[in-house]
Image (tube, rainbow, N blue to C red; front, side):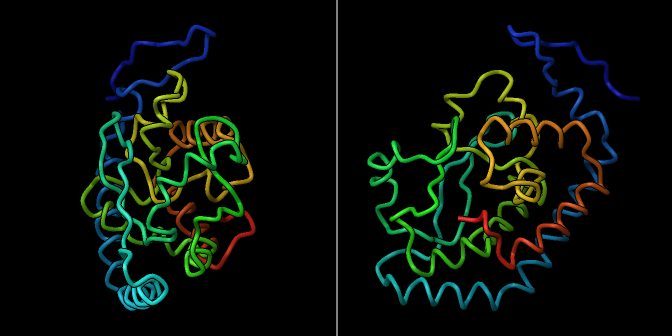
Length: 226
């Protein structure tokens, strides 16, 4: 039996989802976790040669820099964790960000810049193909992320969230999601939130598998990836 949730609304009257609503289907959550564990394990094993090649290329371009980039992200229930990626930027990218904030190309609590000068040569390739995201399979295996779900935001982004925006933090964040396969960087923050909330309301094993299949196409390159 599904839990009965107390309705919540923002000051503008927008209906807010609750933890009881998003966690009501326990069978879905159990199957989803099994898919996450098996999918991330298989992915890490099969993609190990890719990991090795990318690691070598990153070290060749910048021998002093690290192969993996770890960044604090905000996950389910606003819990923080370290998200893994292949390093695609110069070592002092975070320090240089403050000088680029005025050049942000998307609206809202998010930073995106198509020709970001901090991105390395190998970084441009792994970003274009989304290969830089592959180490997040380790986050999935640890249970900090899922294969499918809203992208985990940065702390500074969450600080600007409204109660409506925070609905995307009600579930485990994902490596890919409805936003990535629908529009990716071609839409602003508001549209991303709407797509994430749409996913949360309608999520199912079928929709998760469909998003994973569509994501495979993104790995071969997308004009909206950067």
